[in-house]
Image 1 (cartoon, rainbow, N blue to C red):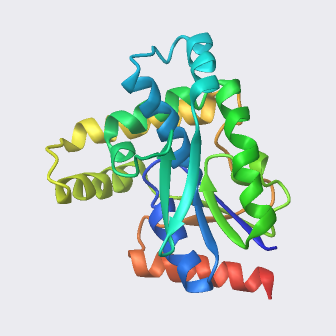
Image 2: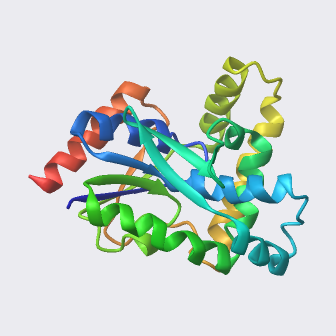
Image 3: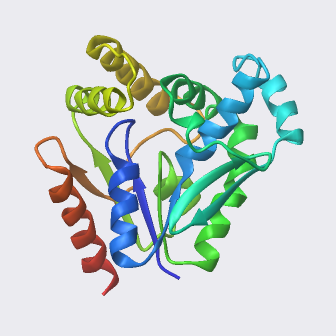
Length: 221
């Protein structure tokens, strides 16, 4: 089985690029960030304070998160309920960042993430795929872009969904998320030692996808 790990900061386009690259190559795409968002959503729905790591850890005992693929698209199930849309809000994103700092949450999801790579050729994206989840991945890519560029993309994405957003607030959230992800004690965001860094600030989506596919093909053929 071939494993491709794509890491990078929030808003770098990992999910879109990884999903399209996986489709092009006939691989399974696994969005690990969606799993953390699902845990965050569970906390929001149960009014659990994410600052209370013990409460979050206790909640995991009655939480089931799974991934299913329908027509090649990943769907996230929280206790057998499809929450693929609910986890895409800004609130779910920020909550995901907080729960991802809790060791019990990371361990809870680790086996699920690794199991995908045992049965299929996968492209998996997240914050610590190349460093922790799949340290032996055949290809490791660190995908990034400037904070300003990522904020602009996020604003357009949310406006297309009909949400009212402010650029300055989105930029502030991204900068804060970058700091939290890179300074957390558990599996901080950083490029793996042997990762290829790709900065998409000046690239179109199509150029970014083509670049990622080229890197993968160069390393697996």
